[in-house]
Length: 203
Image: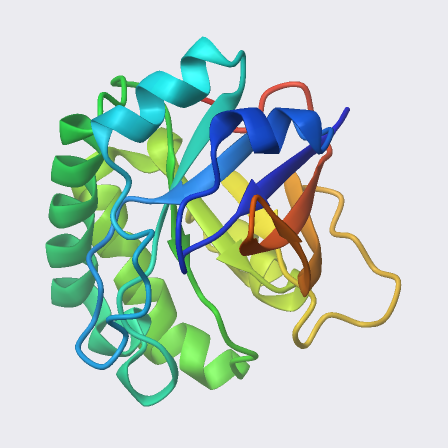
């Protein structure tokens, strides 16, 4: 069904993305965190969206502010609410429509205890702002399974950190299968396989 790029260091041109054979992008509707000023591609802006749409490319929204010790999910319920509100504001400012998901990032290999005590409340915070039908979850396959069992999230984007080799969760809409191995238009990118006809795209 094609591939989508995600990137944060800079913004490749829409023409470069299309010419490289990709059908769209997954883009951050989140701010740069302190110490990550190199992430010039955050947040997604309306001008980029206009160029992507004119090139016939699709757009998906995702959110990640912190990482590692400052991971967004470590703040639990209240962090989920706060990040969801900020993500929704940036999504809307970039021209994002209502009724499509934002993928909240669990960019880790967490334990079941981490899920129960921090991640589940964090995703519940997102649900309280967006509604469960518009909550996407970026996570490894075991965490996707926990989220599904808890009824948290309706869209799933799998990464492979902590995923058993070769496993793609059957509920995954997207699969990030390549990280930092190529550049498009001079920008380092990750590559994601589209697994289902609907994957949270804006149009």
